[in-house]
Length: 537
Image 1 (cartoon, rainbow, N blue to C red):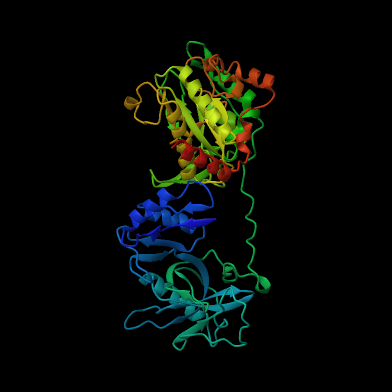
Image 2: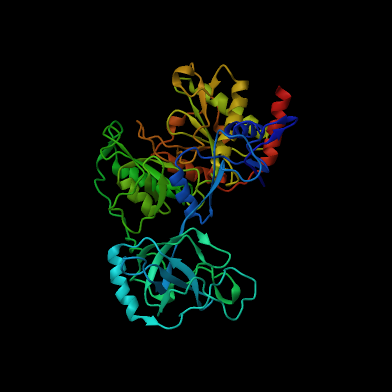
């Protein structure tokens, strides 16, 4: 895979004089959305959140570039490397005297353990309060010793044979102490000599012993140390049965369907529904008093959520905080959220262990006033297109008025690439059926045509899960279909909480479930699509 982030020239044109943003715009226009050459996108804002995410991934940092500058070779102030600051715990192995009238100490000499050896790591001389200077000086005086308790610095990792005796730099004015005190230090990076670069004191760690200060990545016998398995999470005992309440409350006034009916539907359909929910962030729309009452959208699991119920924290750009999403892996969780009055269940296209890589691309066929027969015709056009491209694709009802076409991706591309694929397919269909289909997003501009919505293929965007109930009269559900059912005779209103389980038992299999596992050859599909588009021009 080749990742391209800049374009200096194209054919006989020299692009170096153009601003960076213009060069990237041209580059993106030239590259296909899928294939072995990938476009490297950029972030124009939310730099702090990006830096936090980069740090969480264990990466070194980011490169900041001035957007309006031309390209210049060599080092330039237009491109700057911004490193993620690291923190670690160190044993205090000595201290220096303060300068002037300042009390306490000047700097702390630090050490940590590498391959069973306490080694010198550098010194931190800033970040202390006056109170800390006075309090810690007394403890350090009591631990004084004549010689260093550590050996000289040790680069890590290293394949070089180290000398038997290694000197400690800048140690003439140091009073050495037995390693009894531990402190946390922020720093930029490790130098080649095995010393901290730009260390700053953060806090003392009374909860840690000096022996715990093992350098990250330093293991036995010169090999990186494998991280210890984390202790198993404390999980409360799962109740033998989820407590349910107000089962007789009417949720669908016309049909007299109750909250109990909703819960029993989800219990019965769970073998078919749970594979779509498993390992995905789940978003609820709650109707505590049924579809005629007030409702609210809920992403964040409340504080009273039981400990046995799985949640996953995900950073939200909108709220600038972590949101604890529900993750519904089992029937108990499903019943719990249904008992909260959750009617529709909306899910991400990606899983919690790979949030940036969707499992499917969705094209939502939204009539918004167009006859359903047009929805069917547009769906069949898309069906023929995908068959010509040898692209697997599946169809389900939205549970409302439209259809969803799902294309498996098997985590082979990003959300941006998924959206680009959806747009290409939608444009081909609209070109074939311009009288009844459109990709115009504004309802006023659709002129009664079926809207092919490919924009749902964005990070964090949701679709209603297959088999999810909708808060509409009749209690319809989003039902997986076989393509032979997509015809003028299709009646999506007949799939409800009273008929869905019986239908699935009769079918014996879920016709859409392969979207979770099929891995298409997207590069070959894209080549066929490009050839098709070239012939149509």
